[in-house]
Image (cartoon, rainbow, N blue to C red):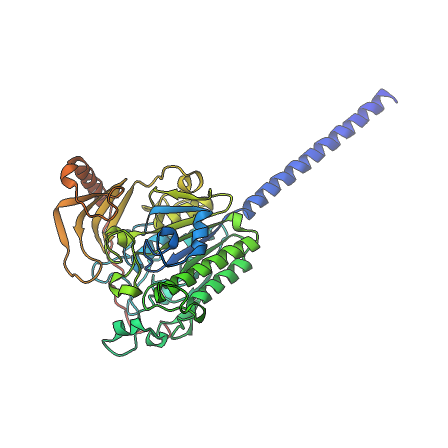
Length: 484
């Protein structure tokens, strides 16, 4: 074979090799890019209502059985120092959705602590919700459950980044239509028709009063349906149950299910729903690409006795800034991503779910406002130290206490319900939550340096809080038809 022919063949072979390498590189890059799109993590946040720190068996309850949440904790991470941003419904939900203390958005009040059916406002349009952030990356989003961030059309989930909504717009004890003065008595033997609460699908009322006997299992069914429909693309399911807020309801299958009585039945039905969602994710083979987190909006409503929950060894309950009012169960699950069996004493908060989820989805955290949430990834995935070192305890619009590390200092204290007066502590009271989680022993006199440090932290924080008029105190402008 002549040298020129050999040279020609070499040129052809080299050109073919270069072409094939180029094709391989292009297809690999495209595959990587497609893979990245496909591998955006899914998010499921399950939010109970008025659940106490001590109400789950994995948090020490002796008679309420929560095998699915226990398994979720055993296969993932369980926080012992996890907080809601407020001790009552509306502000705590605003914080979760925006990653911001509710004082920054006007979603709190010392006069009207939550939104009511006659409220005229809701979550400000300028707030960027977790759903809105995830939508920028193409997520399919659903809110299934109690919203309580505004019942008028402009404030519903569908106007705040959610593609789909199924649930009640405010608390299940509102719209009482029973005998005047007998609401509390009727809560002991609740009949759902005594509360004319609307059940909505997107922006239409589909049932009124909502049959709350079946509402927990319907929420679970709706969540599973949405997950199955969107299993091939990234999704976010926000599942805020309206129980165990009183009045308590459970389906027929759970009547007498728990040794704890009606309250235990309610918790165990919620737990069953968690198990069904976990099983669905596994059946669809997307469990290893889905971050699930379970927590609650605030502590137990103690004045309702056996119809209220338990904060365990923590002091106080719903409505107060004692630990029992704001420290909650916090369980994270993501098979293959979150190491199994971790019990962490690191600090975390519901606001941090906002920042963590957006960061995991590759969404830039808003820079034009103060975002109080931090990224919990070091704790969740590496069992490392939490970037969160402080917590601020607000009752309405007023800062009642501050925590740094194990130290918590109260400037003012007040029971969750019953007393109309607060005790202002001219000399703040101090507790070490590691040694005294029940906040029984004031040791301020023994640690003047810690007292001064926490005072300084509180003052610095106050200086960065801009006064925003409360949106919870805005009355409706006029009567509106066809709205809840």
